[in-house]
Image (tube, rainbow, N blue to C red):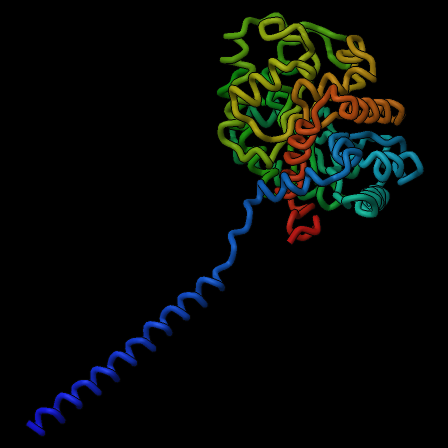
Amino acid sequence: MGKNKKLLRFKDYGLYIFSLCFLFLLVGCKQEAASQAVTVPVAKPSYEKRLADYVDKLPLEEKVGQMMFVGIPGTEYDATAKKLVEECHAGGVIHFDRNLSEGAQVQALNSALQAGAKSTGAKIPLFISVDQEGGQVARMRDTLLVAPSAASLGAQGQPAVVREWAVKTAQNLKSYGFNTNFAPVADLGLTAQRSYGNTPAEVIPMVEAAMDGYRAERLMCSIKHFPGIGKMQVDPHYDTSAINVDKAELESNDMLPFLTMVNKKIPASYMIMVSHPVYPAFDQEPASVSKVLLTDVLRTEWQYNGIIITDDMAMGGLTSVYSQKEMGVKAVAAGEDMLLSCSSDPTMSYTIYNSVLEAVRQGKLSEAKINASVVRILAAKEAIGIWHLDTDSGIK
């Protein structure tokens, strides 16, 4: 019996020790789990959410400024250029031969423009562009690389050659401080040898190859001129005109290169430029201010979420219909993200900028619409590497 009591006490003691060890182990596991739970990082909001939040907090003046793509008068960063960039907060600058004299001057001007943009407000860099299509449409021909015309490249039927020219053009432009080219032309049968061909089958592979070349070099490009101006009878530079073609014909031919690129390409890697003819099959408004074409077709039906930019708003195709005070507001209301004002006289750019700004303040344009455009603009600037949300916005 004594032995049994001792055995029971031993067993009780052993059970006590086992229970104590198990309790320590259980508490330790709970503490470890709790410790692990505390150190799990909180999920970072998505890029889209962070970008939208950043844009929402920008001053309205800077947001509207980002939507302006302006011309400047001369070859230097003078008082006029300074006002457009630093006071109107322009999002982009386009150069013509009036701005370009020789290589070193171009580099200095573009550097000064970017320094000005980064010295004020949100310090967002500029798109700096030319129309360097090649062939007859090229700037500073004695210095900048000039590719063969689209028509001559298209006749070769070799997309790889088109891509190679786009790569070389991008590299050349970037060496002078450009980051945007208003090319390639996606129109069918445009005059002055500006089109790769007369049919979608001829044009589509060449446009795609050119876009691939520009994207490989992180140079912003712009396919133009939606929804296709190859059938125009009057040059929109000089006057308004109607392209009287039925909807089915436009959709199966002229619009097809644009739709194909929208379905294939990353939206932030390119813009779509819209010209000023009227397309009665869709709307009685010039295309650049047509809600039907820009919002109903491009945004809603095609689901395009990149930048839509007007052709030059100083063209007769628009000025013959709307005043400078009206045109910018009409364009933004219709769905444009950027307003191209190429005139050497800054008055037009100031008028368009101030009119859009006032329309938002008066509730005629929603700030939400402005925000959506600026989100697209900054996403594109991030895509080509000139601005970065996480390092340039102050957001961590």
